[in-house]
Image (tube, rainbow, N blue to C red; front, side):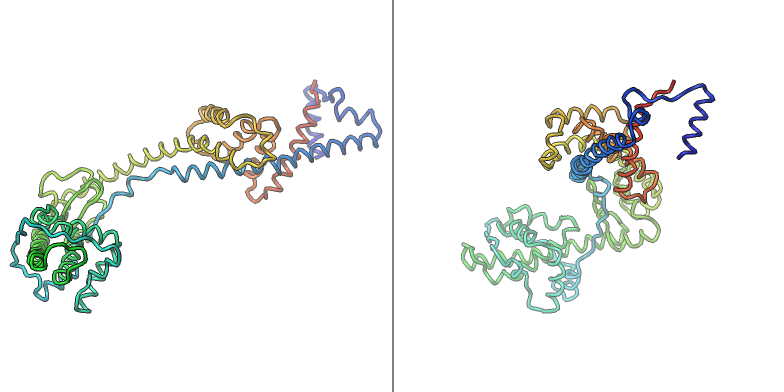
Length: 431
């Protein structure tokens, strides 16, 4: 330290400069007071510094940490969802249960459509134990049914029941459209077949028609479902024969035929299909395997462009969310702030929010995302502005950046030395 002081003194002397303490400064007292008097004064200064540092450590620092936590909490709650994650490819296959029914002849390829009578049967859904209605006599067959049931909640099963069984008649459009349903809904139809198979001879509670009418309608419904499943499986097999890969495109989903999809994956990536979803098919041929393979690069480029644009948009939205987080974190901070710290708060929540917003408008987009640095300004300059805490805190942060192995206590000690040095140097004049 002495060498550094001598070096500075030499530089100043070479420029014809001298350093003098200001009037009534600590440095001037060294020459005008006894050592005992200087020690007393030094102890008083040390006590004052100790009290101020204690205030920073026990009151201001917890507020700083709480504000950072509040900002992160708001950011997490308002984290924008990446729409890219909504895009998916759904693989569709004939359910194993349906394959089993076909192998034993319950469902046969030549089954034809059966139209239900207009007169309806109303079968109220059970209030509890709905899964008990999806039972078959064969233990081995029940294994297939249970496999399907495992992907359905009780509410899902209730929805199937209410969709088809609250009006078992030719006037129910849901029933009439079964042969033309999305192939990915074949699981629903298979479970409905199990349900109807079980209750066509076991009338559930709440049915008001006589047994004869009920039996006739449910028998017809059973035969209609046999035909529906036969039609759906024929359609699926026709897709396989014609090498149609895509069954259906929705806003964010591509439904594909499993056997053809397995062939596709040997040559191309899933993203090709997502690119097809973005560009949209030109015609029915656009859904065929060979056409998709021919245009694979175009679809890949479309998807990659979609991802790039979405990421840019997400980044901008994410940065905007930081500005909101700093503002919304103020009332959260005020709710959690300790009573001992409240007397140091510089204004109302509304006033603080406005000041924070004004400060954020001075930052560039990258600066806004530096939470600790923003908090290091907001807390001591806006929330608690009547102190030297800003100088102390920024000094701590700078030391931590220079050496990330420093503990908070060590960084605080160095920051304290900075405050003392600043206090002394402010009492010096260079002439």
